[in-house]
Image (cartoon, rainbow over all chains, first blue to last red; front, side, top):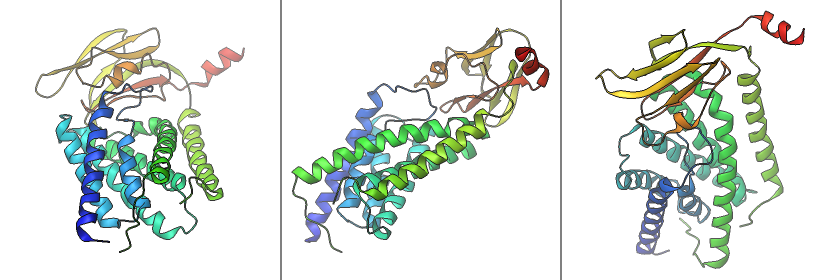
Amino acid sequence: MVKTKKISYIAILTALASAVYYVESFLPLPVAIPGARWGFSNFPLLLSVVTDVGIANTLYIAILKTLLGSILSGRFLSPMFWMGLGGAIASALAMSISFKLMKKASVLGISEIGAFFSNTAQTLIAGLFIVKSKGIIWYYPYMLFFGVITAFINSAIVSTILRSVKIDQFKN
Amino acid sequence: MKFAKKSDFFILIIIFGIIILFMSITSLRSDGVVDGAQVFLKGEKILEINKEGTYSIYNEDGEFLMNVEYYNDAVRVTEASCPDKVCQNTGWVSTPNQPIVCIPNKVVVKPTGKQNKAGVDLYTW
């Protein structure tokens, strides 16, 4: 794979993720869970994982989409920004590692693992650093359940993209 | 790459197992009647509510954050200053297990409850 092609591919995914991050803040949430977001901006992250761009590049996309998206939506350095950053990094790491380790992994499985670690990291950051109360554990199972639904939608989007768009596999 | 495989069911079963585990930990704990609330700002208790009424919550700089209402054994948050209004949409909370959390304002409203077994006996009686 040509290096320029890889750079532009990562840039496209970052731009896509930032735009989705911005637009999804206008969507109404069906649940009253503190700190919850739809989390659709994770599907470019999932796409980068399943096309094998490498852990470092996936981490770049995760950090940059949270930075750009939060600057666009005016949440930069707010508590929601820190939760989003922690969740994005945790899910990027978890998805990359499970893609490398699990030979039988599928898109849905990787997406569910990413959502689980993202929600766990967000709850930990909120409980330890933001509200400093263990009461937020009450919302943790609801957040996980919401994450399962979002992860299913994300994996459906990604498998549709993989089916209809020809993307070269990035062999490092 | 396939959309779903058999191994996904194990992942889903594990996640649902964790969901059920945490739900049973948080919901089965001594359910009682709400008889007040404690308001925490960044982990420090700033207000203890024992009587029915509407209470205004301010932060260290004197900025208005929200109103906390305690009426008829239930607690709710109104007129929150945060942009997402999650704490407001939580609505009336009538179990001491569920705290109302406001992430942007860093406020936790924790209902306090009587943990007496007499309450349970009264209902069964």
